[in-house]
Each structure stands twice: as structure tokens, then as C-alpha cells.
Length: 233
Image 1 (cartoon, rainbow, N blue to C red):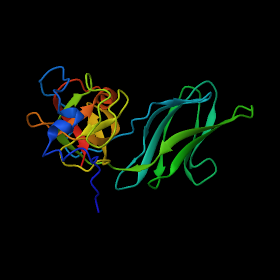
Image 2 (cartoon, rainbow, N blue to C red; image 1 turned 45 degrees about the vertical axis):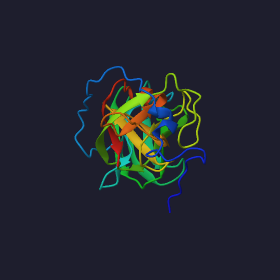
Image 3 (cartoon, rainbow, N blue to C red; image 1 turned 90 degrees about the vertical axis):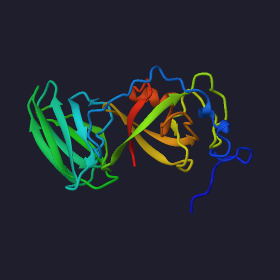
Image 4 (cartoon, one colour; image 1 turned 180 degrees about the vertical axis):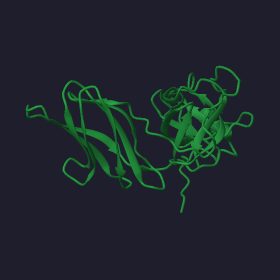
């Protein structure tokens, strides 16, 4: 059962939209629609930054599980030959392994389950005993995305109470929506950049926009106008 999470002093968004922090004029930079090259229903890729150790550099990782439940990690050896093992946890099940020469790259791919944390064990094979344990990330399910019109807000409204009972701050990563329950977790994507956000407010109440992104959410994905974003459905 979904429980309304509006504070007692605030009426519903449809009855009293002025109670929402996002009901004030939005702080958009322009009204030009923004486009995203990803087709509808696309899967969201890993948003983590590449990771380095003293022995290797992780160039790319795709930990989003498809129908084949496969993950892939692209690794380049730095200055010495190494042996790589992609494992579940530091001492768990081995997913894949490979030997790599200095400057070369390889792709480790294998099966994983949702929620499993993957580690890369890197061992020098030049006679010098040294092993690095690099946390790669957690395998997760495919996220289905759909298009939605959005705007963003924040400047001039910081310190106000949102319709979901939170204080709007520069660091609050969330979205406003007219109907989704407060606390609903979403993935928001724009032009290849994505972030997690939570429904924290009611709105927007302008035009045909479905979402109002807080400033922190908009900045996380480089969204600076009114236009089209991708959200998990």
C-alpha cells in the first residue's frame, strides 16, 4: 500500500500546487528541446568513472545485466605483465581471467548475478610479488528508459520546504512529479550521462513538462534547459 508522504500542512499537489517548491518559475536557460541519441527503451550503461591501480587501468565497464546475464570489463596493463582475475568478491567465484602484457588491453567477460560485487585481482608475473584488489562495481539489472519532457529548478527557492517534506538545497538530488509517490527512485539520463534521483516534490506546473529536476540532478547529467530526458519507467 502506498502511503501519502505530504506533510500535514501541505495539501495535495493538484489541489494546492503553490505548496511545492518547484511551482515557482523554473530556472531554465532556454526553451529549445534537447535531444538524446539513444533510442526509446534503451539500457543504461555504467556511469562510474574508470579506475586505476598501480598495475592496471580499467578503461570501461558494463555491469548492466542483459538477457544473457553477462558483464564486461576492459582493462589495460601499465608498466609490467600481469595476470587478471575478475571475481565475485575478493575471494569468491571466478568470472574470467587473462594474462596481459605491458601496454596491452583485454576484455574480461563472464556471467554474474544481480547484486554481486565484482573485484579485479591483479598479480604481477615478472617475479616481483605484488597483487592489487580493485573493486569494479556491482552487477545490476537492465533499466528500461522512456522519454519525458523536463525542466529544472532551484535558484531562488533554496531553503523552501518541498511537497514531500524535505528542505530544497543545492545538493538535493531529486525530481518533482505531479503523481508519482514521494520517495520513488528513478534513473534520469541526458545525452549519455545518467544519475539516480528520488521524487522529492510536486510539479512542474508549466506546459507539458512531466518532471522538474532539482539543480543537483540537472547538473549531474549536464541538463541546462527545458527539453527531453530519459527516465526509468
